Length: 308
Image (cartoon, rainbow, N blue to C red; front, side, top):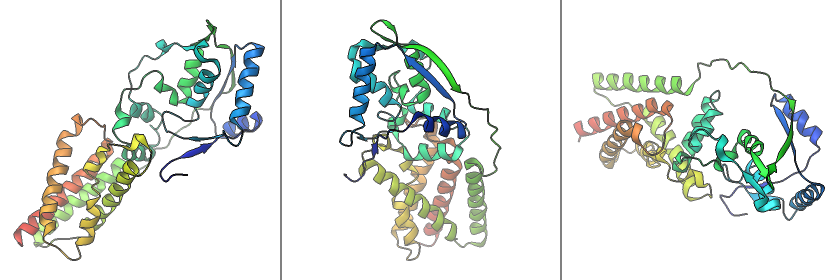
């Protein structure tokens, strides 16, 4: 298996196990009974058996274009070809792939932040009706509006289980709260440094070291893997991989750090100013973090100018 590729394996399980699992995890189950002739059912069944064979069940996974939801649609197209048609009129929004993902992560701010950091510009393209189907909800809707040989594909729907509404408690450990606290610490430390005319490096070592590691991982995710959605990631404007080298260099204090922090101050400052118009929608919770990077880069540059 090549490095950087994700391969998933199809597995067949009794429906009862699947249903029990979803009920235990409070996930709704809607059954769609397809309007197929006996010959069509047999053809579909044979394909599913073939697809479950050891030599056929492994596939290269893609977050948005080849996942467990899109495979349901693709099986119908492979087996029945042009006999199956999808009516796109049920799509009434013009969301991007990122926006579609955000909708399902409203109550998971850290998960939403992680996805927004790891995945780049391809997430911000407007999704076609066909691309909406990477989400199970839209697979269900697309089948409801699909036809086979001119007749409705779904002849009956059964609500096997309806999930209970969950209450999500508010947590103080929210990304915005954490990063605002970090920004406040950076501002307070900067005033303290200026007052005593001595540069602190412990926070900067952590701040630039951690963001440098993040940047290195983002860069590798882009160039060393086949994750198409991770390409052209504008988060690299604030998470520069070179931050890690700068954090390590604090101990030896080389002269190039002066110009480096001037460059960082300019890049992070421009990132903040251009935030609303960047082609990639960066997560708003990151603004205080970038503010902290900007402030500490300015302070680092100022002290190194004074002592040059």
